[in-house]
Length: 248
Ligand code: PEP
Image (cartoon, protein in one colour):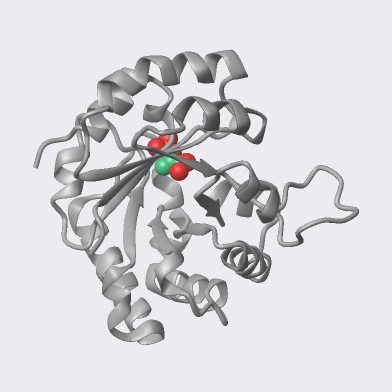
């Protein structure tokens, strides 16, 4: 298993100067961290300047999305090869906000994962059920479908990280319970084993959904939780540093 992975998803927040001010404050707070991996996914507009500011630090540059073609007449899109060229190491694909507001289907997500993997980019593949699906007892069915369709013909498990993000826990302040997280992560691990065999044990499975400095320690002690994807609480350098520096 790789080291624990703690990733900030800034979503559509921060101007370039706000992003750089965060980085200025954040670097000294985490510079001595060596036993875990840290990632930050700024907006596309901030990728170049944030990338420059974190170069040669222990912080990895991540992107929030990518298109599945490498170039062409796709107004408004950014390609995996462009992200690679900009120094991006990880790309978040299939976030529930992309599924919900931009109609991304499992098939589109699969094409995006494939395109990123072909450019040697690591993928943080997001999956998770809505509240309605959980209430109808469909959580495992949904996770299974998202995994099977999203990872169809993806044969490079070493490039994958999975983020389990129950949609009802994202940005709501309602964190999933320890047993809900443990159950979902163990189910995901087993699904990955069915596809990739033993190598699946090396795929990191992150939890995402209302992670804070207050709940990080409990979340990180749950079986099969290999890190976290953090939205709201990653916008403040002090809060995000506290999450990164949680103690075992
Ligand atoms: C996210 O959007 O990936 C997320 C987990 O958000 P939040 O931490 O704000 O719930």
